[in-house]
Structures are given as structure tokens and as C-alpha cells.
Amino acid sequence: MIEANRFSAAAMFLLACSVKATLLLGVAWFIARVTPRFSAAFRHTIWAAAILGTLVLPILVLLMPAWHSTVLANAAAVWGEGQSAAANGSAGKTPVTIVDAVLTAPATAKWAVLVLILWGIGFIVFAARIISGLFGLVRVAAHSEPLSGENWEQRAAEICGRMKIKRRVWLLQSAQATAMPMTWGAFRPAILLPASAKSWPDTRKRSVLAHEVAHIARMDWLFQILAEMARAIYWFHPLAWIAARRLRMEGEQACDDSVLNSGIEAANYANDLLDLARTLESPCRNWSAALAIAHPTNLERRFSAMLNPLIDRRNLSRSTRALTALVGMLVLLPLAAVRLPAQNVAGKFGGVISDPSGMPIANATVIVNNHKVNVIQMTTSDAQGRYSFVGLPAGEYELRAMKPGFAEFRATLSALDSGHEATQNLTLQIGSVNEEIDVIAEGGPKSGVKDGVDGGVNGGVVSYESTKTIRVRIGGEVQAPKLVEKVPPVYPAKAKAAGIEGTVILHAIIGMEGNPLSLRVMNNQIDPDLARAAVEAVSKWRYRPTLLNGEPIEVDTTIMVNFKLLP
Image (cartoon, rainbow, N blue to C red; front, side):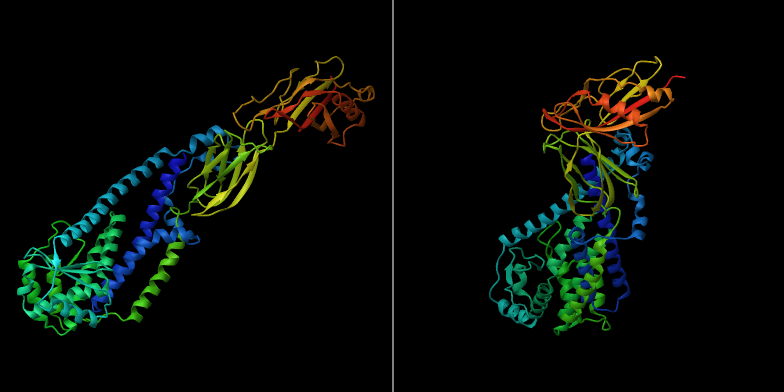
């Protein structure tokens, strides 16, 4: 059951993060749609902030304090696990067998496992694609040579200085004459040029270098890798695919704007891109982790943008970027703190169950019950007395722990919160012993003695133990007391003559030697003669002492002496 809870909690956590990622990416899509006249750099920043937010969300959910939203919780309640009607009863009246039968939720657990398996397969496939693309760049770099001569390094240094890039940019020349110019790397960026680049005219050399250096200045490659990671995590989400594609498109257009802002004519630059797209191809046949200058899929859109003189081509200032980051955090933090039912699960709750001597108790039944959300879960302690619950919805719980021979433990847990681990160590006390004896006058049936742990038996002249002793290897071994010598009370003649009946309730402590100690009458309103007769008889009783792990201990007992007269 614990494994099923873990799978269900993981599946619901994935669902909740997907819902929140939908909100982030949906807002980014809306902003990008309503700002067509803003610069491509602005839209690229919006998409980058949303993608970064989807990656940070799962981490913030685990770190942020919980903020429970009733509205959102009701909206997502349909995804919660159904509970049996038996969960609506009070904890004290729910039979253990019924609780055990309704808690496992096998259908929900199977669906959770299926969802996690499907997600894991998709994640592995897309993550493998990213890794394959990165290894492809390593192979390309290994088969390339440093590009020198023809003033390439001088041109690159001038452009880097203009764009305030202090990192060294590596210029590589591919062995292939038809290799598409591309760039990759964040901290050690590299620009790959084809072997035919030496024969390019100066304007093309300058425009290609300006475009690729603009990618480096804007950290486009790093954001694109993050977008691919987000798509691998949310591979099932259409907005994740849209975000990755639009981020690449807006990044290419922003670099085009940077080239045009450097003084290169739009018509000449468009012709250069068209020639590159017709004559060159990517050296990586599969998906490439690099940014290619002339990817055929979005050339038409880029040509339209670079030839439109009304488009805003300004890059974002530092203050605008800082403001965008601040607004993004103001949206992201509350969104991460909101707890949907998919997220309202405590990380782990458990502890150790021991007896009064400090020894662990094995096979104790532990039940937690949340009446507000109709959640009941049950587990048992292991050989070391440890118990644990995983995936409990956050909230207030009633805790019950039971083991034959021990008194039932009850407690209220009010600190279970999402994403946190709580510990509750329990000590089970020895169960009290109830005795009952009937004293019937005028030759009625013989008086009967009834004994047992945590309850007696009605009727009959018999002495037996009502609870079967369960022996375990370590700790929690209780051998119930047994009445071995009893003196039946004598009905007082005065009370009999007066027709007085009643039940005398006595409290006593069965000592380690088996004799009743500290006899005390609990109902003072009873007739004194009846009380005296009951005390005189019970004080002479002898028990086999209660044993805890083989050692005698004292235990409370309640004795009921019923004085009855026949009609």
C-alpha cells in the first residue's frame, strides 16, 4: 500500500506541475500574440522566462511554504482518489478488516503506475535526443580545425567588443565545404564555419559573424537547451513544443535585428541567407543542439520581418530585463506555493512504536483518519517497531495504534503539511483488565467470574483470557493476567433482608506478585454492606501476574461485583 501511495503521489505531483506549467506557458503565448509590434528580443525574453519557470516550478513547490487554495482545490478535486463509504465513520467504530479492505485503491494505483511509466518512456526518449545532439556537436568539433587567417579573428574580436562579450569565442572551420554556419556553447562558445567560407565576400563574412556573435551575446544556445529540457519533461504538453519552437524563431529574428542594426543592408543580408540555405546543410543529420543561421523552416518569416521597415528592432535594456525577471518571480512564487490536491501530500510521516519498557512492538496496527477529506490509511509496524505513511493529503488527522494486550493509542495530528517529513513515536501502555462476578442469593446459579484484557464476557461460571497472546521476537510480548484463586463474595444478610441489589465497581492494581493492591470503590452511592462484602472477597483473590517481555509488571483492573436477588 505504501508503494501505491508513492506512485499516486508522484503522478498527482506531475499533474499539478503540468497544470501550473500550462498557466505559465499560456500567459507567455498570450503576451507574444498581443505584442506583434514589439521587438523579437522582447518576445524571446517572455518565452525564455516562461520556460525557465516551468523548470524551476517543481523545485520551488518542494521549497515554498504551502498556500492552500479552496477554489483551485475544488477545480482539481475530480483527480483525487475516491474513498469508500466506510471512511466516513468515526475512527473508533471502523472495524480493522473494513479499513484494510477499502484503503488499497488498486485501480487508482494502477493508473498512477501507468501514467508514470508512459511519462518516463517519453522523458527518456527526448532526453536521449538532447544527449545525442550534444555528442553530435562534440563529433563536429573534433573533426574541425581552428579558423585563422583572412582576418577572421580580428573581425570576430571587433564584433565581440561592440556587443560587450568578454568570453573568448572559438572559431572553427568544418572539413565540409557545405556545412551550415552555427554556434553553440555558453561559457566556451564556438562558431562553426564551412570550408568554403574563405571564398565568401566581406559583407557575407561580416553578416554571418554578426549573427552568430549575437547568439552568443544573448545566451540563446543556453536558453534553447533549457527549452529542450522543458520539452523532455513536459513532452506530452503541446505548449511545451510551441514554446521551444517559438523561442528558436524569436531568437533567430532577434539576431537578424542585431545584424541589421549594425549597418548591413536588409536586402543584401536576405540574399546571403537565401544562398546559405540553398547551398549549405547542417553537419548533424538528426536534431542539432546548435543554432544554425539559415534553418529553412522559418526563413520566409524572417525575410518578411527583415524587409519590413516598421518592425521594432531594438534590443532589451538591462532595466527592462530586470523588470521582466521581477514580474516573472512575482508570478512564479505564488503559483509554486499554491497547493492543488495533487500537491497536498506530506512527504513522509512515521515513527517507532514501543512498549513501556522501551522495546519495539512489531505487527501493531496503525490507522490515520482525516474526516474532512474522507481519507483513511492503515499500515503495520515492522520487526523494529517502525511504521510509515507516504502520500498523505495535508491536513489534520486522528492517529490510532492497536496491538492485542495493549491499550489503544489515540492522538490528533495537526501539523501534517505538504512536502515535509513528520515523526510521531508511540508508546503503547498495557491494556487494563476487566473482571466481573455475579453474587446471586436464594440458591440461584453459581457465581461466575469473567476476566480478560480490555473487556469482559457476559454470563457463565468460567474464567478464561478473552485475548489470544501474540508472541513476537522482540518487544511487545504481553502475557495477560489470569485469575487463579478467587473467593466468591457473600451476600450480606442485612442487604438481603432489605431487598437491596446493586453492582459494586472496584478499581485495583494487580501487583507483580499477583495480589490486588489499592482496592477502591468507584461508585460511592452503592450500599456500604455490598461494598464491604465485595472488597473483603476481592482482596483475597490471586492472579498470575502480567508479563511484559517475560518480566512481571503492575496493571490496572476494574472488577464489577453484581449483587442480585432471585424473584
